Image (cartoon, rainbow, N blue to C red):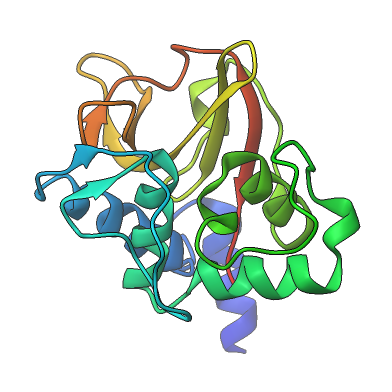
Length: 192
């Protein structure tokens, strides 16, 4: 009987089912990161494993994604390392590595793209605002072989429905209207 009434309410548009708020919490975690002052620092750093991180006042674009997921209890350092250890051949070889490196593998955008393709949902790359939801991961090509990554959040550019991005492109962890600023090369969602 209850299912019947819910079906009627859904059909009438008076009821919207409560969706999993994981991606909303991921979005909020990313926005919260913008409250911390971070200097862009791509230097290789030895870090503990698992749950290792570079100093909280330093980081690059991938650290925004890593830190937001870590807030929700997901350690991308561990997840990427374990997947690379089992399937090293499917990951990029552009750094000349012959084995995994727990300190840096998860901080490289091309590795994250492979990981999200393998374990997340690949979403369409479009120029439509509505195709990008809070918690989505977006990757860009800045120029040549330079890649970038950020998180879509539940805040929007003034006067538009274009979602804002939390990323670090050199000025620290910031909230910006940057979704379509560069060519998009990857669009994913991931939940363990």
